[in-house]
Length: 312
Image (cartoon, rainbow, N blue to C red; front, top):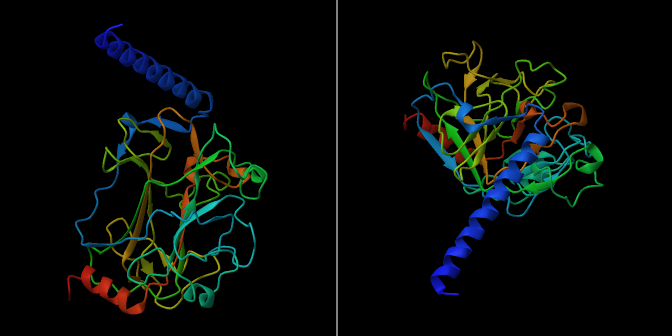
């Protein structure tokens, strides 16, 4: 057989294998769809992003694989309270038993001496085996499948289009999104944005089927209007709330740098995937959420705030 024939045969075999893989992968998604997936072409334009300054803090992509089924923001002191697995960047010691003192004494994956904890539920390929099939947060709570590590993580602080900011207070805790959105009837706490890296500014509340090698994105926008007194509250939400539709903070609150965390994944084409959730929430994409505990050094937070205020 000539080298040209062998080369042509190799290419044809590779193309056939790719076609089978794509077709089989699509079948896998369709078999497990339940209305959770949406083609990339159906992503919709999100609200226009305000033209404000921003500061990015590099924190890595959780290369150390810091994972646990705890939620130190909403259930401190309770092991495995989340009933699903969380992924972390920043503080390397964060778990259910974390205190301000233990977090301060820890190390971090972030630059600028930022010991803050940034967390969100893991993403899994649901057609593959997982190491935690019998463990709390994993298979024992109905979250089956291979955990997919993030390809990219961006931690960004943004300015305000409507006035001066005050620094985020040290030890402030906050959440975004509703981990029990299904149970709660997809109420106002549900804030989910899924997208594809090659279609900027377009989002969905479902799992997007990105194509062309694009990353699957999860974008978490945190509240930024602080009550000026508390670093936590009984609801873990009332002490810091979201801006109004016009970008202005409600009365008797103070604008702080707005935290936005974007997480990107390389999801193999056609493979079914889902986030971890409470068993009652059925791994619904609208239950996506994220947590934050601020341990940025006060001097660094003041510097970030000053930059976002235009140096004023």
